[in-house]
Length: 250
Length: 286
Image (cartoon, rainbow over all chains, first blue to last red; front, side, top):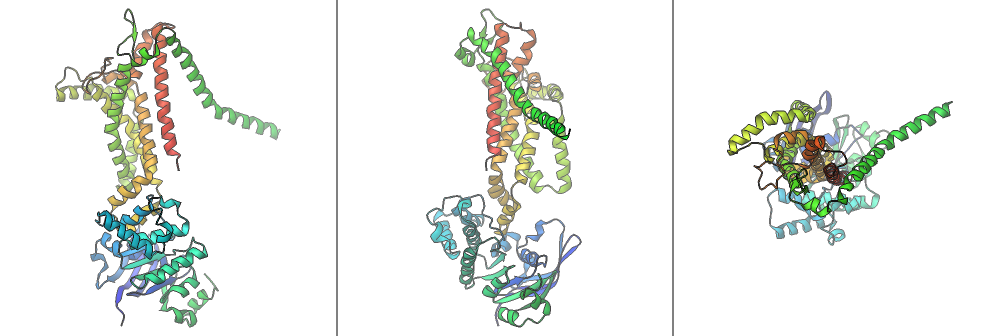
């Protein structure tokens, strides 16, 4: 039996009057790639942001339900500790207004690492893991804004990796990228899943089929189906799932 | 008919558009013509670096160094007081305060901006000045420090509201990205939001200082107006602006003294111009 990394029980989320997530029950296993698909407004990003506690930044946010992380109550961790352990990569690359090096070193610095040599080591390792090292090793002190879109996104992945997370959340990480950059990021993900648990929200059904070990289908805030990716794509149990993956709606 | 209307409207808007440029040019020309007349009889170096301002003595002396230093002392001290308070206040309003407090504070800042400077000067004269005299045990409370404190109140609204705008202009994504890797609120502000907003904040400070250096009435009421080279903050000083305001009424049009006040005007104009240009440069850099 594979280890359960995260257990989500009866999760409901509201923003004001809008009921965005309805009774979600879902487990995330250690070292798997869980992809989440679904049309716009299906709640998949809200679910992801729940795991990084970013929803709380919105003022009218409410939730009910339980999340277990590493066999402990999710909310017993401090927000900072949790976000360190569960990293997030956003839809659009968000390089911070710093150099390439400082972007990656930012997290470790926040978490108290000051030693220059140690930081260098972390930066190089993270950039290698994100498949970016070869492209930027000669311009670590250049502004991150000078990188291409795809490079910026891999930089953001490296920045997340530098915090040594256990789970990495990807929120449609390739939505603004060309196919070549997308391929590079997918390649990085294949490599990362050896050591990390990945949760990938994507609008691209084919990407889910390529990358995911298991796939969950969200619709209007409900979890319709979660299944091994090959099974979900070949023999979906719910005909709404079938409709979505075959492109009949969404 | 329609075409004629279009034509008239278009030209009217065009004229309004260039009116401000025209006014600035005319004012500068007027200043220049009058101010430069001084240098027919007075050496420019003696004017700018002369240590003695006594335009009605015999022979008169037109050194404005004490006035420049007076303005500089008061302005820099006002900057030291108002910049940290202004930026801190803007961070609180933009990032920390709950909505209701935020609205209230913004209204208060606007009210502060709306107080006429003469009223502020008057209040300063009857409260701040005796207070400074008592605290520092001085012969008079009319000092550079009094002026600086008062002027910092005037710079605050400008600094706060422009800094606040600069903070709001930082993409929300930056903040989330910082949060997402475990930054605390303060770490996100300090390492990401402030650096990203830096050009706007710099412009805010410059515009605040522009306001301070041009201010006249309030500062004239509380600084004592002694045109001496200031050795500390606790002595009376006189600023460039106060000199013009105080002496313009009692001078003969067309005299050396009269022209010297215009020459001071040119200096002030140049200082404000430089400050504004710097601010503009930082506001529109990107």
